[in-house]
Image (cartoon, rainbow, N blue to C red; front, side):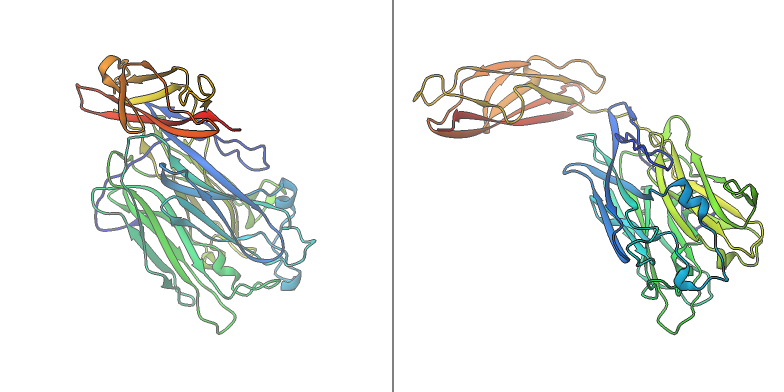
Length: 447
């Protein structure tokens, strides 16, 4: 656990519309509670060649990004066959991809950076799919005031455990986290600078049991005189409408290699930390510890999954941890847990016509359409229907009717299309809350 001196409060929620049949723990699912929904929006790249590569995932316009994560799709056979051998020459030491960064590169964008040391086009990493995921709040009219706080890029001195932290504003909630390593020592077909690829800890910054930000701990070893790497840490903060639970952790360390059936100190480890049934997670990480004298050499080694899973109920880690001269240690999987809020909002939706529909002139040259019927449904924060004057319609900014439906003729082109913006606004007189929905329809025909 990483501690700090100040206390803060926390927040968030959920829904994921994605499941892949991959050789990793499945990501995705759907959780939609009390009108509050989060979607995982992924993007992917296929490894082609060697060196540094980026993949970016984005939330859609109007959505709020709460966090993000990454995973690489290794086969079980690939993982089982990987063993560290210090007696092998570095140029023959094919490795897992190195995750150098997973961070919010813009308010609605999550970037993952990898480094492939294997430059052989026929090497084992070629063609591997790498995913970035952005966790996006899709509930309309429910602002959570997202802010991203980042540290200054901090140099990591040789052989010194270095801690870098970022803290959310007082009174806000930690919803996600990220890191970015800048390491110019990484080279193709070489293990120079390799130890910098792994983090000793990427875990919540905690005060009195509460997450107030994020903390990175790194230990750098080098075989060259080149400048040491720098590390930047990121934390995502919701400043309104979300209430957090305390972060949770689970120790998943074992000396037993399930792939070989033997004791081992460099082997794959996988595990989860689960939030309570009325909570969700969109941020998490890991923390390596124990009494091993070589633990700073061990570091995080190679980690290839760091994501929310199972409808955002768990945070999941998959990685190769350890060292062939190491001893027992600990590995905590951390999850930022947030209460699913009750969303007291008005909802409204235009049911017909569909956005983008077009309507011909009533008769050729008339300049207008036949009457078009517009319908909508709406509800107050308690889910009760809103009707009558609670629904106000406008067409191209002019008031055109009230209620759940109305009919109107629209201007239509004789030999072309005229676009019309149709909007309905529903207002709950008891709470004063309102919401709107809009579509664009077209009048006329193309000659």
